[in-house]
Image 1 (spheres, rainbow, N blue to C red):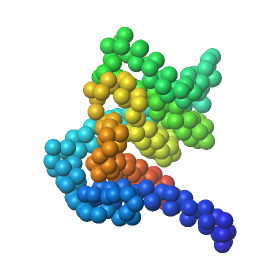
Image 2: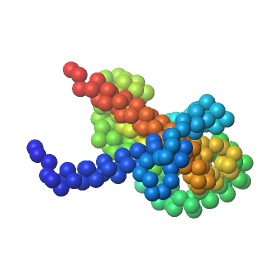
Image 3: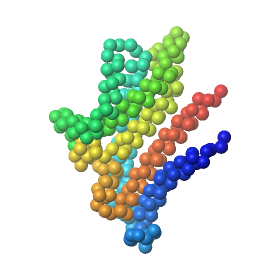
Image 4: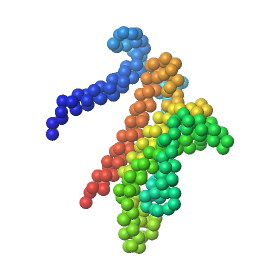
Length: 265
């Protein structure tokens, strides 16, 4: 099937809008001097890259802590989302609709209002300006997406397979892990991927709840952009974007391999 000229034009424009900023980041990260209106830098230098990777601005501990925080938020939000999805899809109980609405509530509240409100609550609980408080907020931010993804997956699967396993003598735990979990795994990985990206890219909520004490890659990146150090900001942006894409690609690879595994006779 041939693509229409309009579709090709749209795809080309989309690719240009994505690749141009990435190319500019690469140029700025290696530029020692770049004056307007020159199309290319006047001189080149690898100082910022060396300083960031091996010097005083060592990015590796910050990158590791950001990935660990995003991974923890992904696991917790997916676990809570899976339990919530199974409850609202497979069981009939009073307030089922209210439970689902409560899970989606953080998505309906403006980000500024949510961050300030939850910060006041965490101040009273003694969790403000702490890693535990930031992790809790990241989980709450990602939870609506996890619930939405896993509710659709659970509804598509239904409870029929577990009921058949129970008839054959399998207990609830064995029926879930042996029958339902393999079918739910692609949805679980999709939920974890979405939750990780959301946590990894959080800036405002991390700043408010963490009080500047909890450092993440997104939190450190913004001041360099505002400070005018374009070379250092570009290297930080490349590290941030590249690491996020690597994790996203990892999840996508796992999903495709699991689906191919399920398609085998």
